Image 1 (cartoon, rainbow, N blue to C red):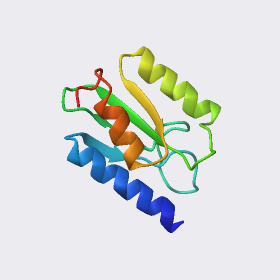
Image 2: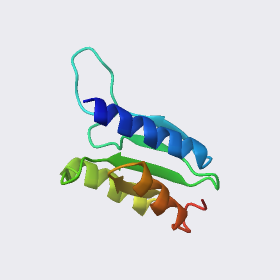
Image 3: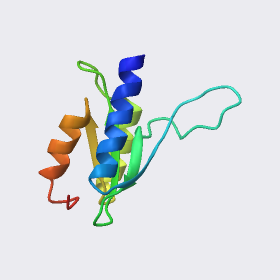
Image 4: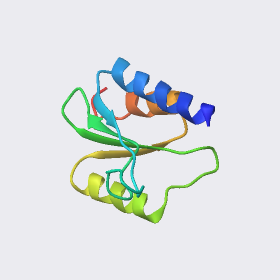
Length: 103
């Protein structure tokens, strides 16, 4: 559990360092708690150039669910960027090489 908390913290720090405006979301269902709709990414935000970006974080060997892939499809279809990453280093590398988000 601690590794997962650290991974999310590092990704948030990376997004901030790259100039993103972002928030961390929890999706799904929990009794008495209002969460993001099922399938939404772990992080959503805005790139320095104004593009919507959604980041799904997975452990090594883990794949996005069908709901997460459906959300990613809608984001991409509407001109946003959807990324599935396993850690901050991968996120930074992908964002720096993606001309669509302008990092």
